[in-house]
Amino acid sequence: MKKRLYLLLLMLPLLLASCSEDLDYRTAVRERDFVKAHTILNKMEDKLNDFYENNEMVKDNAFTGSDYSNYHKFEKMCQNQIDAICTVYGEEMKYLADTNEPDVEQRLMVLYRDASNDAERIANKLRNESKDAAFDVSLNFKNNMQAIVDIINSILPPKQTNSSL
Image (tube, rainbow, N blue to C red; front, side, top):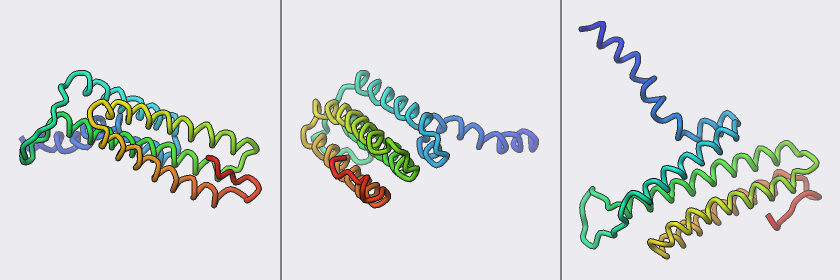
């Protein structure tokens, strides 16, 4: 009995890690593995799309305590996706700005455009359910990305700074 319990305790961290590793974009970002981070973003978006397609989005009119409707779960998933997009693209942009390669401005603009496209896809899906929630998500994305652009502009030498990012 003790041996089984010991083995279970040893394996528990491995089991938990394998469950969360496919969605832990933060680890990939810390390791500067942006290809893996983008793959994780795509998996997260696939899960979001699956949830949206397989659940009826009904807003609860009455307070339901700790039980959230599918709509509230979906709204939270959208916000988490936007946060992940900002984190992954933002860290990749900061890393790229630090390298100071010759074509850094163009590559930063491509990353910014890709992040904006990803965020717009999420906001459009949410807009089908609530224009207010979609506006909040879009505003959150714009504020986060503006902060990232400000950091990047402070990293780049003045001659390479482009305020149109």
